[in-house]
Length: 537
Ligand code: ADP
Ligand code: MG
Ligand code: MG
Image (cartoon, rainbow, N blue to C red; front, side, top):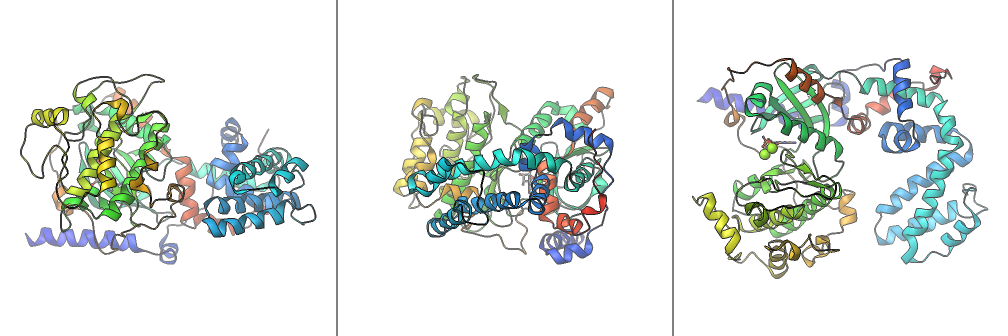
């Protein structure tokens, strides 16, 4: 009725308004907080992983504070910090600017008469760098980077640990480890529904950062025996750090739900784009771009011995800029070293022959499913199942095992057909992505994509979601009032819920503080105010 329509409208408006807030607006509305005093316990926490790599490189706030420290330290330290920054820019630059950046680096840091000369470089290092030719750029720069890290890891690092900058770091750490509850977020409309509950948009009160929160109903989980799955999904998500897979920012529990807080993908899933927006299918330029990001995501998971097992357009989500990530890692599995698995897992229409035949398999199944997904983006149907076709699973299985993949319609060009044919090879040994030393990224289908720049988020998306559109069904369509009655939660369940609820994921949380501007705002306060009291004992 009308009231329902009105509810949806109100829900959409609040959500879009929150999404569209700019930084200044957010700054005004943020719930402010102060950093706690560092405690002995946080010192002992930090001591446990007191490595240069973790404290000064991997953790974003740690990296920032270390750089700030370097800039106030002796000139060699400041020069090293500047060098690392320029090296980073050089790494992502395109041909022309890249050459310029290289020359600048050489003249500033490799010339003994320059004021920012890195004096810890050996004469050998300097000689190789000055004799650079394009072929060994990477190697020579890598060598300088290593020499710089070697230098920083020494005295600068130990001085940093005794500086007020590190004291400030421990305060942030204290804050990062706070208990997370529902009250940490504002909640907005439902974006989707899964097997154990809904996914809704949320916003962190302190920073204004928007996220998606996947809520798993505790009783439903127990009733359907989904606890192990939920924990696996959480553990894999928190381990993966890729621009092409959704990231986990928080894992916490409420009275009734386990919650996974992830990147908000406001552009909708690719299934929605194939079937619900105008003509079926997606235009070729976009297919190439999304497929390139899907390949990168799959390769990232495989490099960690993780098989995704649920590759399909429905699980590929677009963010507000139009870049996509793999999501829903509920079926993903970590391969035991050198072993294979044989469990039947996946979605009808995307399952590889080796899964259907219940054979042992490794990462090959994801390449097959990618072939099906690319086919689907182009054709608006699956290779072995037509659009809206009512057909038994056994028939889809038969076709997958016996029929050839047909390419009908004008949409398939030569490279696309070739790519799909190589991904849909029934014999794993012949399938693209599974043969020794082959790399799907080098296929002509991807000739327009610079994967290195794609990785750095520097390739312009071919299509950008409109800021005033919600790319999913009405929130009312996700409503589910069914209640699980006949399930009682006991002490064992509580123990499991606790294991799941680890709070903020360190790297994500720190990035959130920096990206939202909260870190800079707080650091405008006097850093030196805390003096030199050592928290190490
Ligand atoms: P399930 O594992 O139960 O299938 P999903 O993780 O696939 O649950 O989430 C269910 C639905 O919620 C998805 O199909 C998608 O529409 C929506 N959704 C999931 N994650 C996000 C996200 N990070 N951002 C926006 N929407 C999401
Ligand atoms: Mg799903
Ligand atoms: Mg799932």
